[in-house]
Amino acid sequence: MNFRRPRERQELVQLTALIDCVFILLVFFMLAGSIRPTDAFPVEVAASRAQVFGDEREAVILIRPDGAVALGDRAMTRPDLLASIAALVKARPDALVQMKADGDTDADLVIGLMEDLREAGVGYLVLLTKGVGMEGQ
Amino acid sequence: MLVHRKARHQVLGLQITPLIDVVFMLLVFFMLATNFARYRLIGVESPVDREVAKTAEGAIVIELGADGSLTFDGRPARRADLAAEVADVVRVDPNRQFLVRPRAGVSLQEAVTAHDEARAGGARFLSFSRSRETPAP
Image (cartoon, rainbow over the protein chains, first blue to last red):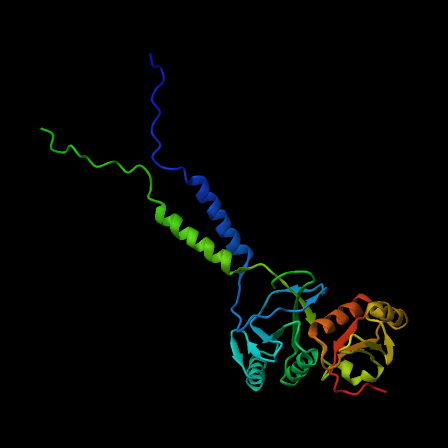
C-alpha cells in the first residue's frame, strides 16, 4: 500500500532568493560606486603615497606621454585647452581643476602646463595619482 | 456535453521574467560602469603666483637629473636619502620651502616619487618647479 501522498510537481524554479540577491547587488552598485566618465584616451597615472583621496570632478585634464592633452572626453590642442579652462574659472572661480597625467610623461611638460594653468587663473589645481602598487586607476 | 473542456489554466504567480531580465541588465550596466577606485590627490602649488614664489630665494631646490642623479640644495645626494635630508632641514626649520625641480627627460613618476619622499621627510611647503628657471643663488 502506498501511504505517501504524491508530491505536487514543482513547475517553476524557485527564483525568489536569486532575485533578492540580484536586487541587493544592484542597489549596492548603484549606491557605492560612481559612473566612470569617458576619457579621450587611456592614461596610466603616476603612483604616489599621498594621503588625500578623491574622485574625478568636472574638469579633468588628461596628458599623454607624447604631449597630447584632452579635457575629459575631448582631445584638443593646448591653446584650446587653456582657453576652455580660462572660461571655466572665469565662470566659476572656485572650480577644482584636476590633472590626470601619464606617469611616463616628461615632468617638465606637466609642470609647464601647471604654470600655464595658473596663469589662466586656476586657483585649485590637483594632480591625480593612484596608490603605489595598484593596477588600473 | 463538455463545451469548455479546455479551461484556462489559472495563473498562480506574477509573471516576473521580464522584471528579472531588466534587473539583470541594470546590474550588468552598473557593474561595468561603476568606478570604485579613488585617486590620491597631490595639491599643486606651482610657484608662479604663490607666496612660495616670492620667497623662492629661501627655498631648497631638489633637482632631479634624467640619469637618476639628485642635487639637494646644490650638492649631490642619493635619492634614497632624500627623506632623511629633508628631515634634517625640517628639524631646524619646519617652515622651510622645498621645490622639486625635474630636469628635461625626468618622468612625472620620478618627480612624484621625489615629492612623496620629501613629504615623508616632513616637508610642509612643497611644490614643483620647472627646470628652465635658474636656481636661486
